[in-house]
Image (cartoon, rainbow, N blue to C red; front, side, top):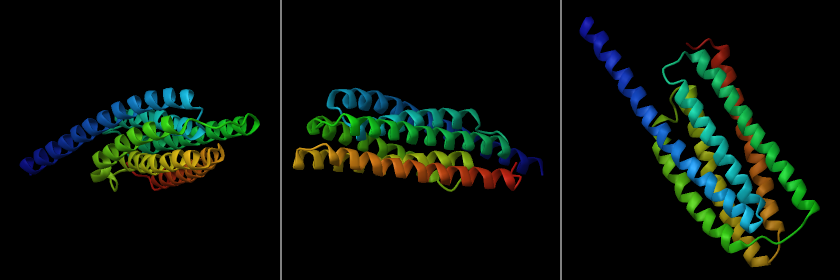
Length: 206
């Protein structure tokens, strides 16, 4: 019996150590991509790039919170997941404000800058998704982190489409269209994380 308990303790400790390493890796990647995309968004005047950059910043905060509650109770993880949903919702609000500002101040973004930044961002997002893939059906803490990473891949593809549209039509509306689609994605993701966290909390997971 003692040997079994020791083995279980070691297995849990090893799992938590792997989770910490993965979260630290994706945290560093998202901080780097946020800095890159923010600079590219300012340079290019792109709403979709700014949306992606804000998403990466929100994800970095999400992964930091996920690190903090590894090994905590199910209720603690559920509360943190609720806060993660609030961060995603905050990103959606910021994107909505940016879209409104661009509608009042129309312009044509620099599509080359959008495309280069979007390619780098997509590569980073795919790397994060692969790191988190084994944990997508884990506890609410890691599952919500994977949800954020999956959104990032869709966001990366969408921003690439925005760059292509701006270059093809020499207009700013494809950038705003993609930013609007990302806004809807953020709202859907926030709802999914809220629902997952609430179900975990209501079920009394410890």
